[in-house]
Each structure stands twice: as structure tokens, then as C-alpha cells.
Length: 345
Image 1: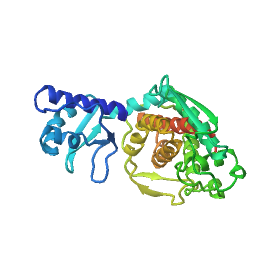
Image 2: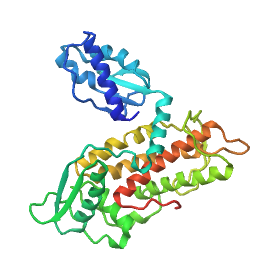
Image 3: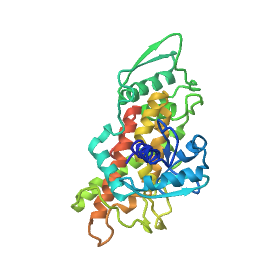
Image 4: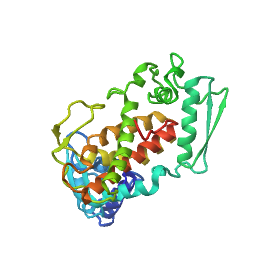
């Protein structure tokens, strides 16, 4: 279940409470769901109760208590808790996670594409500047992914003027140069340095491309072991030994709890991020989101393949499917930014 789908579920719960006469409010046009903040619980949280408290003439906690049973009864929801002043925290069922992975693998690189800008023409008038050219080029693809069409032209009045790069980024090479120009917000001055070429954890571009290459390598390794991916229950991921290869983290053989909730949340959030990047003409939002996905998937990857004499199980096939879904999102996002997603790194 994506955040967009979950927001519809929350709205339906509010509508049920209104229809039952337990709330006297106008059902809002939209509500926001997002990963829970500090002190939160579950997969997502919404502040709809705080949003409706004043028009309902009731405390937010009371509004949350009214909405909670209707939301808990919704398909794909396995639990709802109230935290803080009235936040509704939602945990999705395992089948919802499985459905998300199936959707990503089914839609492939088109996952997250939508029709929110269908029929719209976005005019991008830019100055003669290399960063403006690169940002506009990425926006042409991002806007197209949402059903719109971006037209780029030079001259006044300028509608897209990101802060220029302090020096020529060409020596970085095409991929690192594009990342250096796209990753910062348009109002921030980009940093043009060899740091974008370093193959270390400190380099966000490397983390994104490395995570993608690792997901692809796992598919090849699994084929060598005689199994393929199949979405399903992930099994117990607690206390998996993390044997890294030294590229990202040289603390090999450490034991750590591996949690998939951040990864599932970031994958589910991809359609919203793409829509926001297109609407706000902000490819940097997509670039930063890819870093979030990469950082969420890397801790999960050591749990994908069997170890020692362990035989491939349904859980291994499901974990491989989850890794492949993450790789698909990373590849699709990099493609929209005009950056190569290597199979090997």
C-alpha cells in the first residue's frame, strides 16, 4: 500500500465516522501520511485528528479515538496506535508489503509514474548556464513521468534559475557532474569537487549506485544457487550477521538488527516523491530520495542469500524480491536524472 492509497484509506475511515454521526466535520479533500517521527509507531502516521479537532469542536485525542476503529478495520491495516497529542500511527499487514513489492516488480522502471500532470505543458525558460540546462533536462523526463510535457527555451522571463556552479563540472565525468548539479536544492550552490568520484560511504552518489549494483549482483548470485525471487513473507531478520565487503563499511562480522520498515516506507513513498519533484520543478527531491532508498536497502542485503549449509527458502526468495524492487526504484530514479545505473560496480 502506497502513501497515496493509505491516505485514501484514512479519508474513508473519517467518512465512516461522519456517516455514523460520531464526528460532525466536513471530510477533508486530502490527508497527509508519512513515516512516523520520534516516539511514533508502525509504518506510517497521520495528523488527521489534529487537523479535524477544531472543526469538530473536540480534543484531537478524542477525534483520534473515534477514527481509530474504522481505520483499524480497513483492509491492509494490522494495527493502529495513538501517540502524542493525537497522531494516528498505522502498521500495515505483511500482505500489504508483499503487494507493494509485486507492484514495483510488475511496473518496473515505470513504478511511480502517474498522470497528475496529464495534459499540462510546463514552460521552462532558462538562462544560458550549464546547471540550468542539466536541471531542465532532468525535469523534462520527470514531468513526462507524471503525464505532462515540459518545453525548454532560453530568454526572459526566466522561470528556472538555479544557483550556477562555481566552476565547470565537466572534469567529473557525465554522471558525477549531473549528480553534483542535481542533488543540491536549486537555491544552494553546488559543490564541484573530486569527492563525487570517491567510492566511499561519504559519497551519496556512490551509495546509490553501489546499492543498485549490489541488488543486481544478488540476483546473479541467487541464480547460481538455483533460486529466483518471489514476493512473500520475509521471515525473521533480527540478528543477521552483516558480512560486508569493505566498500561501504569495514566493520565486518558485526551483528545488527535488520529492519525493513524504513525500506518499505521509502519504496512506497516513491510515487509521491516523483509527483512532488515534477510539480515543484525540483529534481533534487528525487536525488535525495534515492539516497534514502539506498541507505535503507544496504543493511537488508546481507540477509538475502542463504549462508553456509542453509538451503534457499521462501523467505530468501521474498528478500530477493524486496532487494530487486529496491534496485528497480534506484534504476528508475537514476534514469530520470540522466545518470547511469551500473550492473557492476
